[in-house]
Image (cartoon, rainbow, N blue to C red; front, side, top):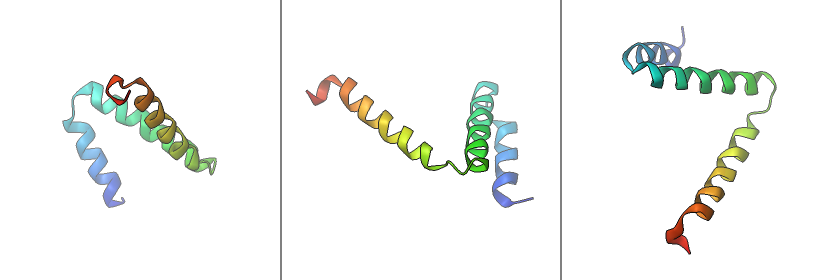
Length: 61
């Protein structure tokens, strides 16, 4: 097994259930995007979220 997979497996067992479930969901999404050769969508979503955060932050106005 790959070192990163081993590390993830160990961490999933140690984290709180809610955290582990969220990580499983996100990793599954990344795997699906990789299978579809669409990982560039993650970057687009991250940038979109950053912009939304800036717009929502009252201290930037």
